[in-house]
Image (cartoon, rainbow, N blue to C red; front, side, top):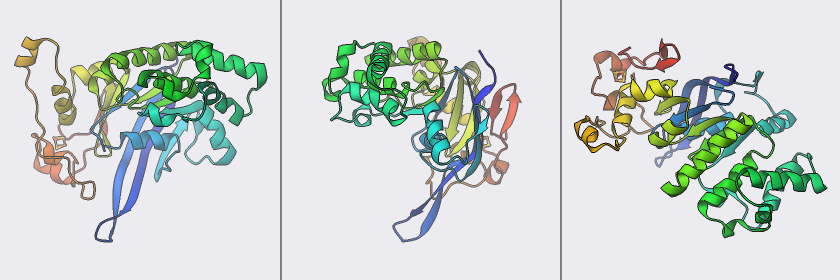
Length: 322
Ligand code: SF4
């Protein structure tokens, strides 16, 4: 498997200007100078509390949102400023799956027509060939060809997410952003969908950006993990390093909250509680953005934004302790 990055993101920024209740304009730095890479056939898990900017990263990569600055190179091509036909053609290779399979599918269309739509939009197939593509997609996600004659409301949540996945892979993309794809599903169904993601990755060589607030799920699916806090990347590394030797105090706190199946180990483990609440996005802390909640905070943390540094091979962290 290739070790070259399929996707390389450097200094990605996405800021929003919002009107406050008092009529003043305020800037929200939803994503602030985030950098990472995703390799062919691999999964980068992106974790963090809700509102930390992880979904905005996904949308900005696919150009559903326009970045303020930063460079995104996909498959050797700088796609940061693509427009028109080139952008549409890029979308064949980059797809996104959202959390809610209920609202992702057109309730008035049969599943067969939903899966045929991408081929028709891009003028890629018709007639018997199109019929064959749709039957193949249904088979890949575990449905018989006859299933295509049903409407989305006739399926359960997990089955609908299978249909969403089938549509996402229809045009043979290389990269899929999965934004909380199992969060709305029952726990028993989650593992089936995760296994489907893994099987399709193996069969099709897909790369995933897997966005989730569920650290157990991310551990199960990811090769590398990025931890975001308040619009910035706090830590990034391979899954073993992040889960077994987390460096950033925020990562340590997040991981300490995952329950361990062994009750004896669970009792003896120290849970790290975060001090204070998440700061207001209108008023981000100076220096290290985590300093208001960090028990290791020192005077330099109050005014100096820590550098994003590679402290071990492939293990990056933004903290003055390293
Ligand atoms: Fe804590 Fe300082 Fe590290 Fe920020 S830079 S995480 S405040 S020790």
